[in-house]
Structures are given as structure tokens and as C-alpha cells.
Image (cartoon, rainbow, N blue to C red; front, side, top):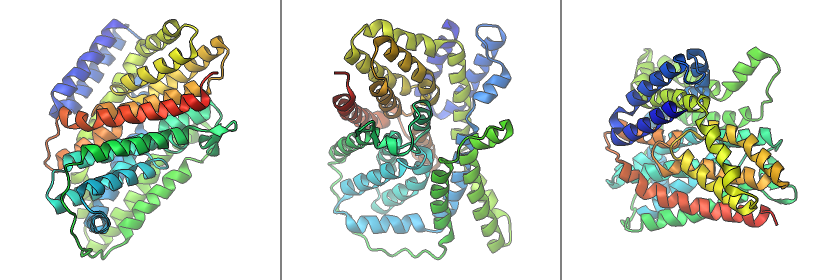
Length: 436
């Protein structure tokens, strides 16, 4: 376990220190994990490492990037930016409203997909007002992550909880006769909006703009809308029993995004009578982000196989003792810290049975701990630029547009935003569901 833990710590220190080389650091660390597995330090083979990669996420990111390229070329983001700026008095309100919009969308659509759809609008607003897009996209990114826990279809971690606790879509709103996690998340979101307004309080420049941009091709916009609706529909498709169909089921969101991207690119190629749309889409694709995520999936599988996550989880019961409140605070706090540095999907998958077991030993209803786990793990990723896929993607988009993003740039927004949302959401959850 110790070698894997050391590699993991060094990996994240290097990624925080040398952000331009993060994809290569992650891939290099993935190779080291494979070597440690081959040497017998823990059970991980090349096959198990490849199985740990979330290809659904990678497909969804890459395909949505293609659709976003067409969306930008249609000039719709610029028009949306103008329509929004007409309605708001200054830049502070423009950023706040855009972040709120991203949060609402992410409650029903994957966070990365939400970011990829809203980010072009944020870039357009920044260009119009001649301000740095860095804080704008960071605000959009953390808002996209925030409300993923609100509904069953908002995030992979929500889907994990729904399956484990046998919760359906409506039970994320009202469960066992009480307000469910949706309300905890939304209260946290409202509190975090106040934080954004404070952080952007000096952005008082007036937004004076007319809706001038003309959109002569609405198909890319409808492709974006179709992608959103399809992602929602795919979340309701039950898992089949057939092993082959199970593989397709696990890739359903990514394949849906690929379908819409191919439709858009093929249509554009026919219109232009050449394959340049495919070339432009490949050029705009953020391969650094895809490589980084690929490497991180394997690194996380390495520390999971080595027992690092299990060992951390095993400390909960010993530290909490027989105090339900202490256990709740511990679960929320540790989830926030860990998910700021590791992928929350394997963490939540590992912790759900642990939480149920601890609650069983204490003889209490595990619901409050399930919700605390989800709040901490989902929102905690906003503490650091590498804690969530959406954050990694946002930084990749900024760099693609020639912007330099430092860790400090992200922390100035991510830390107060996250701590406020977690404190409000977790407090409400305990008040409603806490063990009396």
C-alpha cells in the first residue's frame, strides 16, 4: 500500500506544480502503477487498469467537443451572450446569471457536458467585454459541478447512490416523507451564488450591448439541445442482463454524444462538399484533457487496488466511535478533502457499503450518511483544479484559447465557493435527517 500511496502523492504534487505537463505526469504515474502491480505490490494487471478507465466519460467529452465546435461556428454562443448581457446591469450579474444557468443545467445533465455547452457563452461574454475569461470559466466550472448531486441524472455519483439505496428519480426530491438531497444541494447553490457575487463585486463595468449577431444555421443548436435531451433519456434506460448489452449500456451517454457529433459533422461536410469539418473538429479537440483523464483513471485504480481508499474508509468507525454527529462530520469532511484530489466515482462506490455497514453497527438509518457522502464527494472536487473532470476540462479550454491558469487563480474562487456550499448543504441535511 505504501508504494502506491507515495506514487499517488508525488503525482498530484507534480501536477499541481507543473500544470502544462499534467497529461504526461498522469500517464507516467499510470505506468508506474502498472509496474508496481506487475511486481506484486498489489493486484492490478494491464487489463484491469484498462477496465478501470471510464470510456463513457472520454467518449462524451470528445464527442461533445466536436458538437461544440459546430455550435461555436454557428455564432449562436455570441448571440446568447448578447441576449444575456442586454438583461443584466453589469459584469458581476452577467457572471452570476451564467453560473446559475450552468448549475441548473448540470442538475439534469453530466457536469462535463454542461461545461462544454456553457463555456462558449462565457468566452464570448469575456471577449465582448474585453475581460479575462479565466475567472468567468472557473465560476462556470464550479457551478457545473455543484448541482450534480441534486437529481438522479445529474452525476455519476448520484446514479451510484440511486442504485445502491434503491432511490428513483422523484426520491431525490422527496424521500421517506422528508425533503431529499435536491433541497440540500439547491440551498448550497444559493449560498454559493452569494459568494460569486462577492468575489466578482469589483466587476462593475456596465454591460451595454445590442443583440446584433445573426445565426444563419440553427442545426448545431438543435444538435446541442438533442444531446442534452438524449443524455437525460439515457439515464432512465435500465441495465440489461446480457453481458454484451451491459457494455453498450455503460457507454450509452458517450455513444449518444458521438451520434449527434457525427450527424453534425457529416451534415457540415455535405454542405461544404469536403471533409474539413472533421479536420477542424479534431484540431479543436482537447487531447491534453483526454490523456490526463485516461492516466488518472488508472492511477486511481492503482491506489484502490493497493487498499489505500479502503484503509482510509476503515478509519471512520474508529475515529467516530458511537457519535452519529461526529461520524457525519467526519464523512462530509473527509469526502470533501479526498475528492479534491481523487476521482469521486471510485471513492463513492467504495464508501457506500462502508457507510451502510457503519450505520448498521450503530443501529441508525444510513440515509443521512449517504447524503453527507454525496454532498462532500460531489462538491469537494471544486476545491482544486484537478478535483473534478469539469474543472480539468475548463482549464483545458482556457489553455486552448491562449490563457494561462494558475492554481491560485482557481483556489481564489473554488475554496470559498466549495466551503460555503458544503457547509449550508450539509447543515440542512443534518437538520432534516440527523439522528435524533
